[in-house]
View 1 (tube, rainbow, N blue to C red):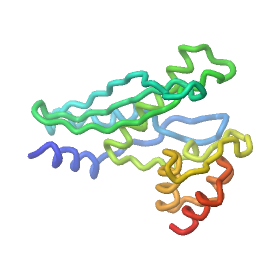
View 2: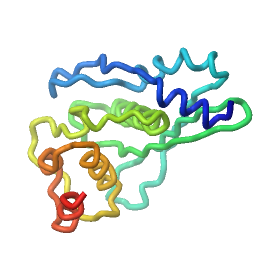
View 3: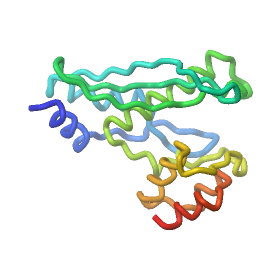
Length: 181
C-alpha cells in the first residue's frame, strides 16, 4: 500500500469527537491531542508515523505578530506527506503571559495542520466563526488574504455569509466573491 493509500484510509475512516467544551463561547471542539489520539489505531495497522514540527517564522512586517508554522507529517519510513498551518501569536492577549500566548498559537497551529493533513472539516465548529461576543474586529479586504480561503471553504461547505460578517468587516470585492460561490 502506498503512502497516499494509507493517508486516504485514515482520511476516510478517521473519527474524533469534539470532547472539549469552551464555557465562554459555549461550544464543543476537538484539540490536537484529540486528533492525535484518534490516529493511534492506524499507526501500527498501516505501519506509519505521524509527527508535528513547529517553527517561528518571520512575519515579514513590523506590524504583524510573530507567526508559528506547524507542519504535520505522515510517513511510512520511505515516503512522507506534509500539511502545514500558519498562525499568528497574539502578544496583546490580556491575561496571558508570553509563554501562554505562544502555547495557545502552537495548539491552534497543530490542530489545523493535522486537520489539513487528515481532511478534518471544522467549518461547523463555533470556533471557526466565534468572535467571543465582540463585533466584527478584523477586516477582510482582499481575495488574496489567507483568511479569504478559509471563508470561501466555509461558505462552500454550507456556512452562512452572515457568520463571516459577524467576524470580519468585508470589502465589496470579498463580499461579492463570497456571494457568488
